[in-house]
Length: 86
Image (cartoon, rainbow, N blue to C red):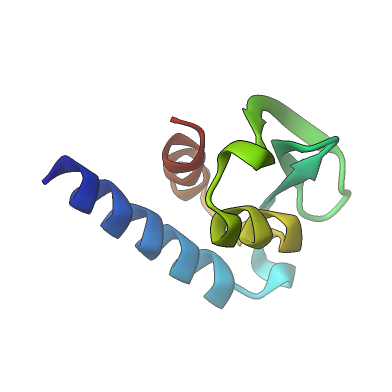
């Protein structure tokens, strides 16, 4: 049951991130040296480097992060990080 809830939250976060125009976003979840990282969407500066390697994620999730997921809200970003990196 918990796994289904986590997948539903992850799916909602991905849908929200993909629907958000990059111009409105404050954060981008992406890749840095093979790891999940948070970037400032405008400047591209790394804000946080996680210890989660992309190679540990399912291929579709890893590809989404390589492409960049944009977030306007820090809570949505934190939820996505928790889902990808836990």
